Length: 189
Image (cartoon, rainbow, N blue to C red; front, side, top):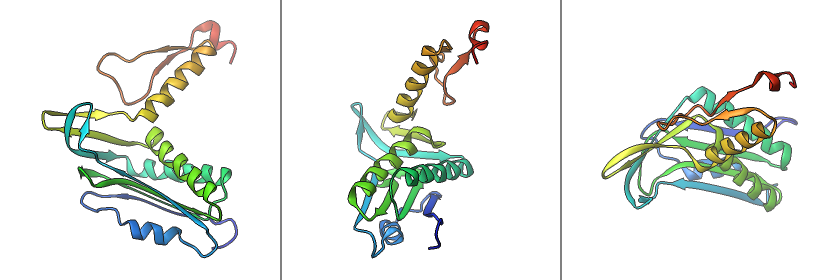
């Protein structure tokens, strides 16, 4: 690896392409690294008392890859990392199967562990990958807890700056909150 080159492997896997853990661990592994941290997000069998049959993922792949690349750069600016590998599946993911996998390597475990947590939290909060939970009695598109927390933080910040934030109608929306800037507030920007 040349100086300044970021060693990242980012893949959005098409339907029916399971995640090969060994591929990603092998990619981040290096004799100079004393730590490899991984996270595997798997489909659980229940949610809120409902039996889950599978999750289904859709994405705007080019934007998702750009977002993940940006997150990798942010992680590298905070932690001393050797390599990062991230894979996310699209299409149906059965109960017990893995839909997202993150692997990081570093000289020391704290960097690898902290960066791995940061990356999965950022993926869930802001990457344009959408999840539908399919139950025995229906299905629903889901917003991740991290996304909702990020939106709440944005609403609190803008309201503290005097910007009015309007809630969505009861049907919900995937595109964030509506913001209206009052004339008197606009003068302060």
